[in-house]
Length: 281
Ligand SMILES: [Zn+2]
Image 1 (cartoon, rainbow, N blue to C red):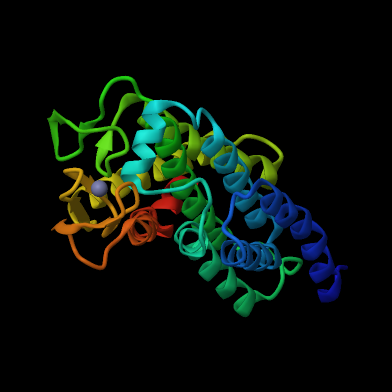
Image 2: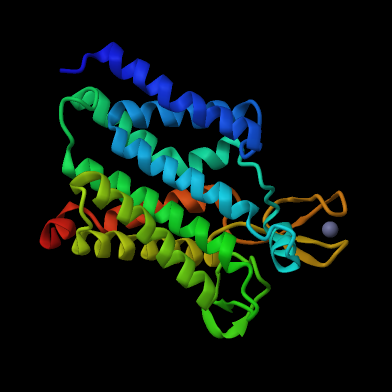
């Protein structure tokens, strides 16, 4: 029987090397990105190590993919458009892990630390939240390398520059499916030590759905700006390239990319709620 302080010690033993790796690799902003990620890591671990393993799978794979072909011109330009650097700040950490953090906190308050039990519906919700986040991250990091220009999600006849929120490409969709399946695979292997095909299928579909919802929200309600100096559309009201203020172009003013990420997880959880899941699993 495991007791509470052993769980806390184990959480520290597992999280400290990851924190050190993130610090060394500069994959998170310091100190706030690192502190926030450490907090998410600790809470998910205390709720259940399975949730933490999925967080680690997301964090590890996205760190690798952020660096993958990062000198490629297509990727460089696309990242400039999204105004994203390689380092994730605290807001991005919460945009990616915030829902898992809330559900894990709820799980701890309600059922205590992980040694008590694993609640299947909670585990599914957290898995789906990571499947969406991972799917979307892989789609972004790999999809921007697409040689064929992405099509606009609201009008398939129109192409948009790589990295545009709401742009979808065959490569991006493939990456999205792989990213979701990766989480599904980790979930089913960690839980049952086998690959359960129908679990894998549901999680992959959920992740892909979330990623497409993300694109749809990115194309419709996400706030976009226009840099009058460079005549470019940006996601932030300040254009780093030319150090000038941008003017409002479209979307809902307070909805940025981070909020779109959170909303896409929430909508996916509503669609793939327990009712639907229990029909299949
Ligand atoms: Zn500019």
